[in-house]
Length: 88
Image (tube, rainbow, N blue to C red; front, side, top):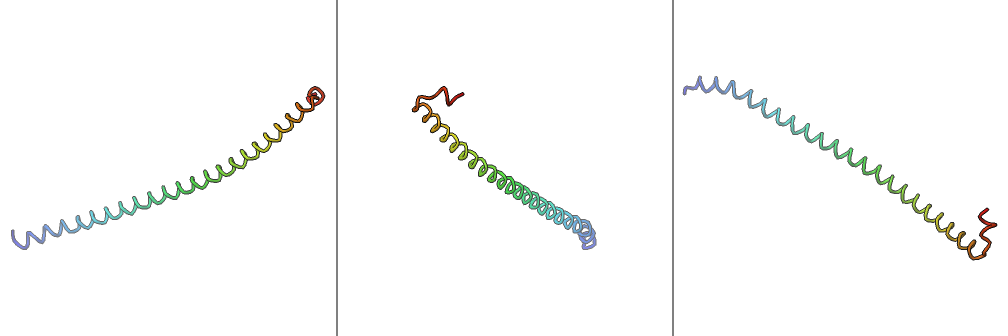
């Protein structure tokens, strides 16, 4: 193989190698950006779910408080024996 043949081969291989390297870099950066977007979406969903859970916990506490009040009221009605006048 002469130097001329090696240089002509290098003229073809060098741009192809540069193209492959840049394509791989672009693919990796695109993949990195996609994973970053997925992570941000997951974080936003997690925050929304945390807010929903906090709201539901507050609602359950309120319902338990209301349930306790109603049970106390029912107990007081049954203790007095005046159930008919209280119910109607």
